[in-house]
Length: 203
Image (cartoon, rainbow, N blue to C red; front, side, top):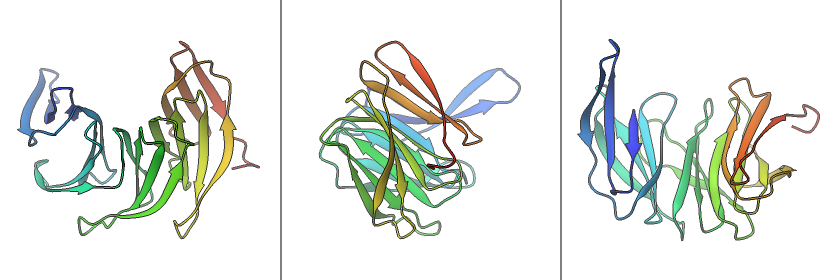
């Protein structure tokens, strides 16, 4: 398990399967701002972090769970509040308060992801990201009270908005796909959680 904190620190924890607790076995070098989001890739080979300092960091992991190397993913001009890996495609997304989400193509061998698409949310702070489990679809939640579903084109150079999810009366705080890909949820400062069914015809 990885945790990020307002103390500018990311820690890695090993969960004891006998139910007795957790053990912190590694602490990453101190960041330049609070750590807002962390995520492991499905293979367990990479960890990504998003920070208030405007950077995301991608780290490669050894078989014992320790960190071997980290690189900074540059380009955002605001706090990186959300990071997410695709479950079955070599894609990574970073969302920022600069109003953009960047989609990165992962190299599963080398630590050199390439930014292949930039999604602009009309200067609205992006708070949460979630990939569809199998399709190249990216769900984005922001401060404009709306979540949007984007399709990443096969060449990665273009993202097309599939639909707007309207209904909340305040800022979106969290978005997430259900693991079967048929449903998604959005949570808001309006104290509601909306559950949505994906229209197969529009997907």
